[in-house]
Image (cartoon, rainbow, N blue to C red; front, side, top):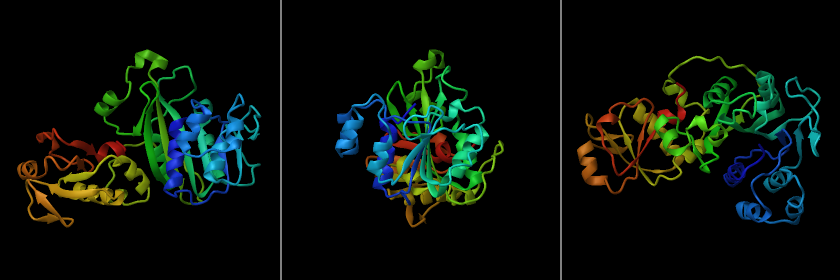
Length: 342
């Protein structure tokens, strides 16, 4: 699959936000190429030009090494049976024990779906990633029916993160056909309106999943179990949800109101405060005064006072009552759809 402009944009943002704790070495799972960009487009994207990159773009395959050089990594290699330049020949279906180093960044750019032994693959990635290192996955989620062995659901990565104490730094949906890449809202309405959902089109309906996770411990890899649960308040305070993830969710919000002054409202408040977006007020018909040091307005008083000022209304996980509201001027963001594993 390679490294697309969307992945490069995310890596550039990670660099700008100084989220690379170390820049020791980068590893590609599969020998990756930069795809879909010419040299001029690449230069404009990263806002930097160098002669090494220009020479690389004259080749048939444009190695991702140039982007890791730009990001400041001291070393780079990849794992692939094709033995391409910079590649080490290992079978990812088997335990990889011969590499005597760990990596600050590991990028799986559409390789994992071609590996049958998924458990061993993710264990290899876990073992090769250093503590505080980042793991970035670009994988198929819908369509591409003849592409590989697997398509992936976000649930897999949430559960793998939870049991292995990874932080979720970001989850994006990437619709290739509509050229749409944005933080993933798991509601059907959002997916239908923003991504091509006609699975009958086969390869003309391709949704990719982009997941960024951070390894926080040196513990051994654990295999997640599949079960349904609703996280309690304590879950939301764990490091599984990072500030960078929340900032991406609220990136286009300027002034926010939070609906509900209960536990869900508290969680929503904590999430929004971490993203440094301006909170104007709370909305609740059954409580008065202040909540989290913010004024509480009824639905009616909010419409009269802030209807033209607030651009986004946030709902905490499993917040009830919103079905009785009709906010035509505001965007609604339900944190359940981003962060709760159903």
